[in-house]
Image (cartoon, rainbow, N blue to C red; front, side):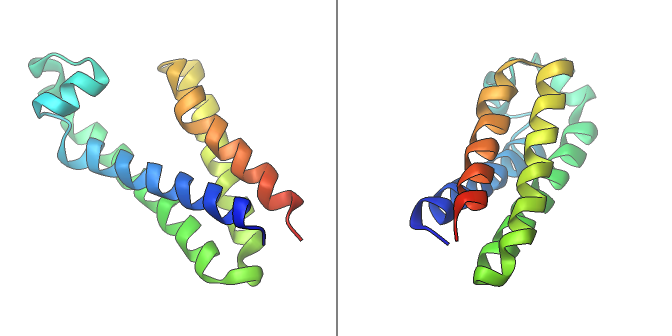
Length: 119
């Protein structure tokens, strides 16, 4: 595995830990509302949905860390979870915000490409 592939996959994992924190714990705070451009009322009304979404982001991060921890034996694990990240990012871009394509799908696709190209 190349250093670039490990770094990119690690970055994607860290991004998903950040998404988990934002969605599960900061959703209704001023910072969380600013990031997602939410009114206090809307943030409160969607709090449970955001927490559920954050949990899924945590699973993506955990899968990527698992793949990284497995070393060269974890390549297929990384590819599976990176493909999940890309699919989720594309779906989010189509259904919620185009920004998700750049924040989630693009880093996932870059990492996927680097892991594929790594020997």
